[in-house]
Length: 121
Image (cartoon, rainbow, N blue to C red; front, side, top):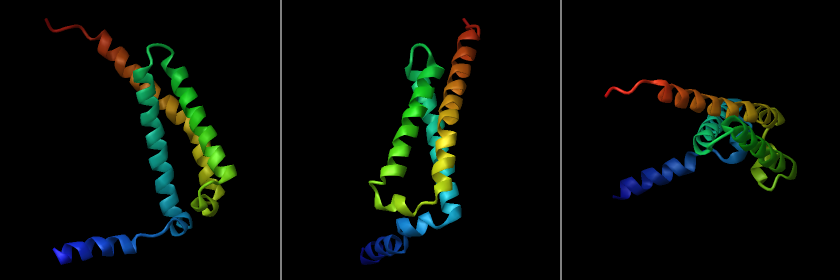
């Protein structure tokens, strides 16, 4: 039991802090890829939820994400945002709307293929 508790504490202690992650290019690139993937999934869910104009709704969702990111980048309400390199912010902003649109396009294509398949009755 004590060994388990100490193992968990040791794992937490060795985790890098936000400043260390901000200075690590590989970590920032991973976060950019992860965030882009999350936006693709968000676009997919937005298109799935919308009854019409799925691509438009997803693009709007992407634009809202851009606005939130710009706010965090400019106003920097989070201390760890100060140490993040600008290239990661800019790359993320550039990718957000196309990523959301891509997710919606995937969903629309899947939905159209599903409705076009003949039933097996």
